[in-house]
Structure formats: structure tokens, C-alpha cells
Image 1 (tube, rainbow, N blue to C red):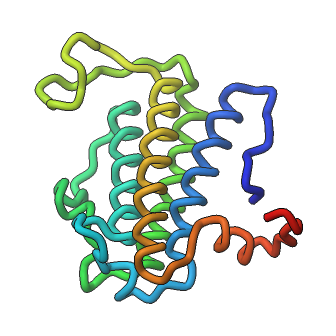
Image 2 (tube, rainbow, N blue to C red):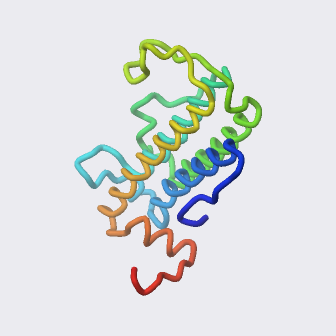
Length: 181
């Protein structure tokens, strides 16, 4: 995947493409890491790369479950979502995220961008004055949410081994860097 998403003429395709790009960037921060490194919290934060990928997967799944009215029983609590546990691997959470991405795209195709769903009340970070969101807003929110967590993961990765996102993408995609870089 190139460093920039391709333009699309359809808004749904464009939003899904941007979300896919942000997911890709987040997953790339784990490229070449051991499970131990993916669990590590080398900054003053309690965040890890594996935990951020796991949280992003469960967060996205939760939003689309809310939008479609699905309920699930197998969901980790909020704090556990941010932790790559000793019985999980980085490959496990990347596979989960890929599964969630496919579910999300199917849900968007089923519901459409204009589909509205209720804003649950009593959650401190959900605005009380908003009664409903639509899927268009949800996709924009996820682009922002995953992009923020990809930035967190990028800093954590650089702390682990000095590698930066640009270097990792270039290696994975076989980029030939121009002389001016």
C-alpha cells in the first residue's frame, strides 16, 4: 500500500480507503517485533504496540456492533483491550484486526453511510447533546481514532528499536528513496 491512499470518486470507498490506510500504518508498527517487544511499554505510558492494535480492533468492532445493533458476549473489558496478554501474540491481534476490518466493510455495505444509530447516554466521552450518529461520522471518527493510535505506536516503536514508520514502510514496500531524503 502506498504512503498515501488513492483518491476515490465514491465517498464510501474514500472513507474505507482512509480507514484501511490508518489500520495498515498501525499494524506496520509491529513489523518485525517479537511478542515480548509488542507487549513492552518502553515509555512512561502504559501503552504497547500490541495493546494499541488490540484496542483499535475491539474499539472498531464495538462501534460497528453499536451501529448495527449486534451484541457480543466475548469482549474484553476496557482496560484489558489495551493489553497484549501473555496468552496472546502480536499475530493473534493482527489477525483479529483483519477480521474486524472485513466485518466493518460488510457492515458499511449493508447499512450505508446515512444509517443512523443511537448515542448511548452516560459515557463521559460521548456528548450528551448528540442523540444519534450516522455511519459516515463513524468512519471519520475511526480514521481519527486509529490515526491517533498509529502515532502513539510509532513513538513506542521508535523507543523500542529506533525504527520510524517511514523506514518500516520503505522496507516493507521496497521503496527506492530519492537522494533528497
